[in-house]
Length: 256
Image: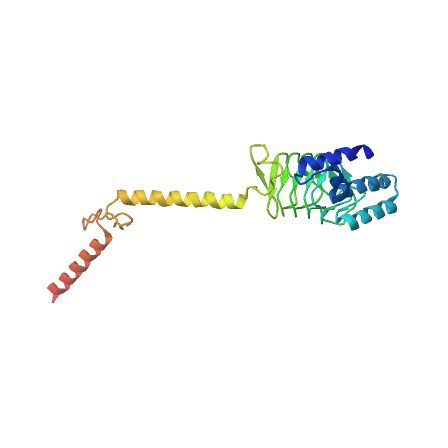
């Protein structure tokens, strides 16, 4: 348990440019304090000292604002930045080198017993305010965008954004900088942009077809169907109509 303390401090310097000294990290970083308290509580929980483990976890919650259930399993080099409002459930499992920002919930969706919280893979970044709810796995090297609500399994090397969370693949690789969880693609916006591009292409095609035909560019003339009797094949409909009206008028005069 205590052998991880040095790596916890080192992880802070690797992920937080605001960290200035080990003294500052040890005495002022609430995320580090919550992880250390959890290691003590988890050791007691595994020995079935459930009440004492819960007392330690709730005391840590009171001082840090981070609630980690003693039953949760946490890997090495977890970094919780700021951390206020972070909730990690009892059966949650977190891999190595995971980064969690403030307001994240790793929770369940029902009252069932047993495994009901998510399993987070290695090298995962979970943005501020994100909610990962249910018993499923978030794959290695994945990125959960800020305020995303993830309700289903996430494959490896993916990015999830939106509510409900939508997976965005980028050739099986991560999108951008590992910690830059603000510059994430929005699949809805991308879909609208693709539709707008198709509409613009159709407008251009209609313009080219219109310009190639008779009349002024941008106008479409109605063509009457072929007729063997009146010889109107290929003639505009308005000319055919005028001719028929003249014939009717002349026929009426001749009868009179």
